[in-house]
Image (tube, helix red, strand yellow):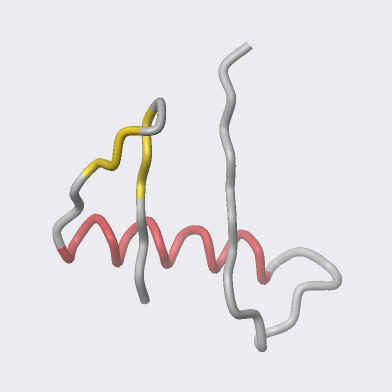
Length: 50
């Protein structure tokens, strides 16, 4: 699984542990929602500060 993190359009390098951790959390959150199956190809999460 590939996980990429950008903050204000700047790529933040991630080692294996943060990639695994963040990826597993995102997958678990998405797959727990109704309508999201296990055959997904890509999950995008965008956080914008108010």
